[in-house]
Image 1 (spheres, rainbow, N blue to C red):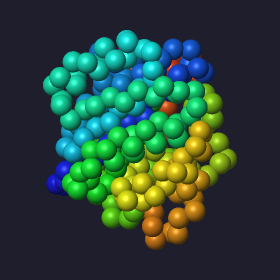
Image 2: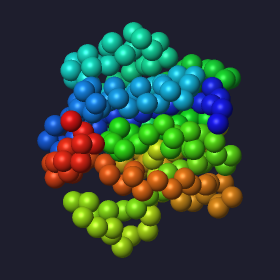
Image 3: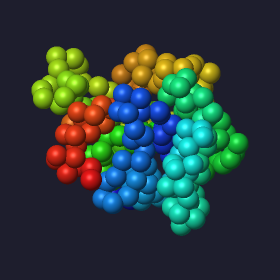
Image 4: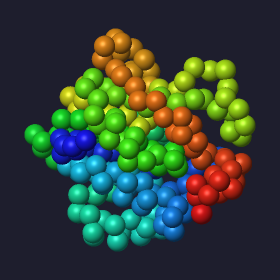
Length: 220
């Protein structure tokens, strides 16, 4: 399946990982920091640019990305000075950065985090192949320790691809932890499609989840 270069990528990686007790950006996968692994993964989709939002005052994360940025000039970091305010502010910073680029080449934006440790290129390509204004991921809602599926409906969320024009329209509604999910839920059905991938159920927010990921060799 051909990959077009009409998309930009925003990686939301400014979280403080308070429940985990350590920066998830610096967890190791295949011998490198998770933030670098995930950034390399998305570069394969040949985006116009990659904006990585990182927390302020953490030189270790900056240094982890430094070598990659030299090799991949399309990768840029943006510092979120107030990461404790929530994901929505990080996303707004990413949109603002794209707006300043003022590139007519950007038609869509792929938005993702870094802690869905089984995310792969195949899923990203399937998202980018969608034709609706929003193409979101869909996966099971597992309980806290990944022991069983909860009774909630499937999660519809990140990673997702969204029309750049629509994303700019939504920017003013992104406040604190009030991110894209409530805006997506309000879309008419013909404006959104989903790509199911239950491997995305496995993220890393707690020490138990990290231990499970390491036991499964998903992380080093």
